[in-house]
Length: 244
Image (cartoon, rainbow, N blue to C red; front, side):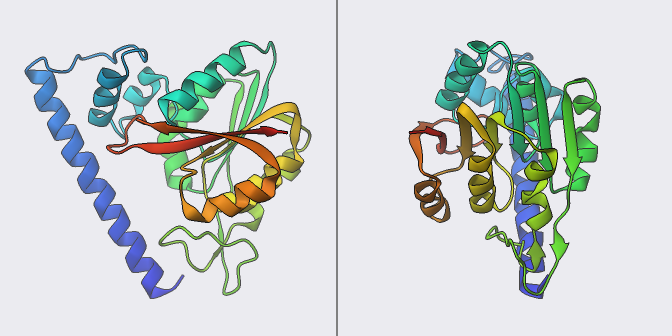
């Protein structure tokens, strides 16, 4: 990894820590004056649920209690209904976290690949509660010429080829594939190859310019959902992709 990438990664981590500390502090104050409840409001009360989520960002027990992935609320509702209409669903997920817990409560099986070993260890107590959830850590490999790079800041000099290819090794067709980790352009292309008939792909943060060409190249029909997203202080976009 280059010095520039290392510095960018360090700055990003510091920014995230500052944000988390600020949100936790504000949330404690709002809870103390009863402006926010101690327990998460129902998801149907979007504004209150969203405010509650901001106060509990990166709070693992609270993430489990919230029972939501970090997608737009419209995407959550749509995927929840889609899963409920199917007696059995096999899910593959690029990028683990709150979504892994949420999916494990609704799908037959979930296989998630995670690039960050530290994050996976941090979430392990919650992951272990679900027998139908497998979270596999596949870290990126340092490389001067990555076969599958990531455009995310701080990820220069890393090859995500093994991470992207995890879906090939697990094998078979998946009813739902979630693309919410690193190297998403390559992950989306690989997801299409493993999508079961009538299947669905969830691509998070799909407003990013670098993902638009990948969506167009996928050949899938896109429904964009925008708006509030749990834990994020700004509107986001999550795309739902299906075969045409």
